[in-house]
Image (cartoon, rainbow, N blue to C red):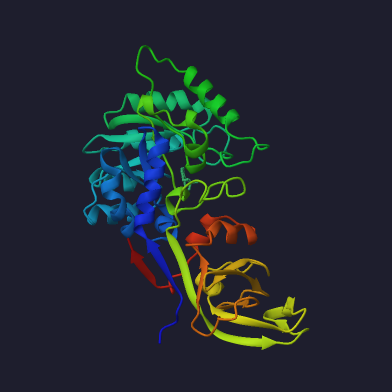
Length: 374
Ligand SMILES: *Cc1c(COP(=O)(O)O)cnc(C)c1O
């Protein structure tokens, strides 16, 4: 018998979630963000599952050049955006060969791009730093970068881009206002000279769902949803994935591999961080941090056993967790357990473990077999 743990990837749910992104996008183009192996869901399967639904006004946004080339070699023809652009100038011929759109985020990248000899024109995204202070041109560099690009024979169109640090913050948080003001100020400083405004690409999932003013569909804008496509809420403390009509794509399922009765005072797992207050029945589930379940998930983290909500007990081990079987008398060896996904949002596990769904989804390890449905 093989170990019962597996991840189900529901491609129909992925397409459904893209549909929700489309409803919000109001006609803007959609970059389906598939970096980090499609947030742990498997890049080729997700890219192929979305190909038809992306249609003419959609593409894939990635970080990894190798992944982009793999998608082209798999026959996918949609536009591909490289979110960190290129790392060395010798990648530029590959960008041209495989028709990849780079994000240019520094003056050095812009200079290298215009200095290269490319066989064809490529559209580019020019990334502005409006307050995230990771990647992006600063105010002073922006006009010069734009001049260089506009004079270059390699350019097939410029889209301006920025990335929000707080689109997911609660009502008391900073939100996007400061970054939107800085973006507008940078654009206003430019000499448009009667030219149409540049298309903008601003919104991640949180901004797409919450701030319609970031979508800019009328000027040919594009949006960049990632996490929502996988059925997770970008702001789970304020709105759940279900409330946003998003469906979980990954369901991590296992089984009870042992059941035991423990007496009051018995401790469970490494360090004995949980001690039974009364005699109780517990179950051992084949899933641990060696599979990507977060080691920091504390006692009380929700788990579904035979569809019933219960709680994790004690420390997460590499290969196992222990769960409370109080009130689940039918539970026995072989009873199905859902760690996250259908019926139990990964957002709940992430919040319990003090992290975000992104990290949990990306961290699914290679030993977990994947079953594709939908
Ligand atoms: C990852 C990423 C996104 C997608 O963000 P989500 O919060 O997952 O929607 C969008 N833009 C950039 C630049 C990114 O790196």
